[in-house]
Image 1 (tube, rainbow, N blue to C red):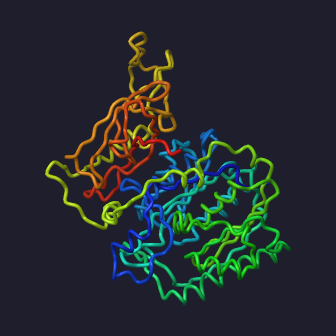
Image 2: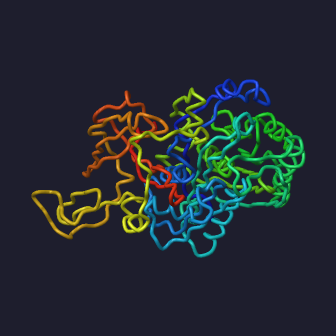
Image 3: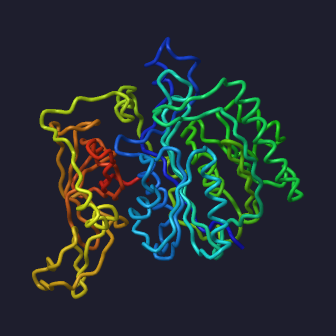
Length: 479
């Protein structure tokens, strides 16, 4: 039996009420505001940082040494020629002898990668991680700006301890030009709405569902939950009626609480479905993008053993309102900011980054084999004055350790898209201390000894080399 053995998700802390967008755009808006709010990644987040967060949620309590593959699905990778899945695998401190692969170019990339991960497990892989993450941009005053939200989902696929087995799938491939982003485009482009609806969503999704049911001799009433793509609440409801689904069978599409998360959209709904699933439930997910993928899972007794996941529910319960459209524009870098006189042009030595990649990207320090004292960054000499062992260290990962804020400060002079810039001395449970930026916080809400957790974030954009530089920051825990 092959299927899902663990799941996780990530939703950014900040939420933007769509009325804030509509109020800022005013007369230029093409239509009335859509209902609800959308999740907005912080200025130091992107598809890679969200992927690491979702994967960390998925791996909670599991042995990372057992993972032998990582697939990343996204349409918003910061690189055209650099393997994004390799960055995520390094940040997670996964073994170096694993297979990594990027899936992109379509909103259907998430389910394409899911099918590929299942095929890999049926072959010679044991535990393959799939992460889908997107942070798409719609142009100002457009419906896409209101609709798009940011988020990620992660699954571990294997053949032991399966909580939801894959029982069947059906795929449709079609080169329908509905939504696209050409090389050099910042914002998503799209064709006429009615054409996309009539020839795209409302045709491919019901067809994929009906063909899968016919293939496996099932009917709509056999499924406890059906999670399918929908561009907006009205169209989603129309597709549900067309498929003759009862209201209780339709998985909440999260459109009014998170938004359309691109390649992660259908898979985030799958996480939400699994959070409420019970043994024996059949779950159908249907993605969309240049066709459609339909996959049907059956939940097993192992679902009862899944604990310690924030998933969708935990992240939805933890949020902060983003009340300013201008602040949102700064987060998305659509409102250029002049650097302060104190700011220096960021520069990255790629040679040094490679030499220190495990310490920087994986947040791995050292631990004394003789006395057990952890240190970050890694050292040759033990800091314990009663030990002082030399060259008796072993690697020690700090990214998944609990910590607290020993002391902190706010800097209003440092350049930041969201000032003031906060820094703090972090004490890790079990030992180890170092200085990190503090993110997802309000300076006035910080306090000495408050708990924090480590979060993989984008530090800056190196314009000289055209790269995004990543490290770890401290953040208040999410629920």
